Length: 429
Ligand SMILES: Cc1ncc(COP(=O)(O)O)c(C=O)c1O
Figure 1 (cartoon, rainbow, N blue to C red):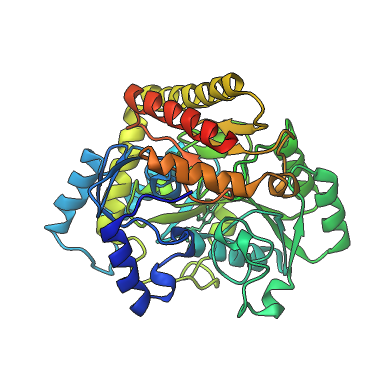
Figure 2 (tube, rainbow, N blue to C red):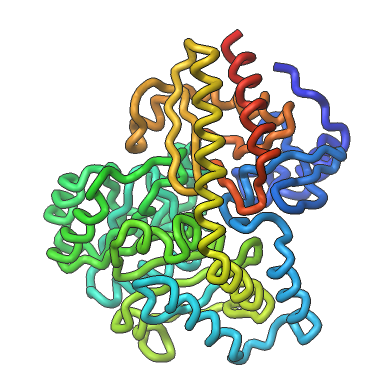
């Protein structure tokens, strides 16, 4: 289709690519022929340099659970900024954050605060290796845990469109084996095969290869297998943390991993992340132990204040927030299904859980990376373009997930469902 020209965004993109590789600071932000540029955001909306306002379902790739520019979070960060932005000495704020995470996340006996999800998974794996004195890592096909060498193997998200990243140290990635998701027998075989396995790292719900849900009992089987084989189980809750439930997937599915990593929704738009888990493993972090992890900005008072305010809001209003998120998401998914039924002849599967959903152009069940890849990605790309024409912004790739926030309202739902209906009709033409 011919996209409506976005004059200002095109100009900005042409300027950006002269000094920034590919014109963006993270590859998933690029799409053909150029992405729209943002100037502001509020609630469920993102405003572009071309004066367009879109209903946002990218929502910072899941970071903005409460919505853009949530007042109590902004107030907390602004109030802290007046008192200084970086001390690099401890603060009581950091204790409050660790105590709060410990209160809401069942496995979080201790917490280390970092800045990004990638830092969190990298250091969780390092902890697991030190604890077990073993080297191997097992991850799942299509699982994404950030852009570092330990995990950039058959990864999802933007990496799903590359054969393999160049520059990754083979010696590091060779220690990482990959098994299919939703196949506990395959995991058991992989651990049997490599007795040097230190940890299994899993997104409890895959959210970076589209959205893929765990089969019934799958996560408890994984917990059992890892426990029996003395392998550290890491739940990468960068997406699911504080989203599926305030206690994340651990609470939602009633499973206690040894370690868990958090980012995204923890700061509702501020860069803050955490590694949490069993005390005896966490105590290895230097200076208590000998696993070195350090960062100038870790625990900085602005991000930490934002995170305390985010968790405070979630704790206070959890009885309202989580049911509302689920209702909004269900209404969108039900609405999309009704549109598809009305139109007929377009085979789609929709996976959804809590406040996340994704549409796949395939009649088959999508339950792992292989089945996600069978979906028609060209039709998906058409869907993205057609929705954007109708002021609805979803992540531009099939291998991402759509995120609903606490700010999305009835009007958003109606407009979104209508936009999907019109988009599907165009795709069918
Ligand atoms: C499940 C998961 N883990 C880790 C990461 C990496 O987080 P960050 O981009 O903050 O480094 C992501 C990012 O999308 C993610 O979805």
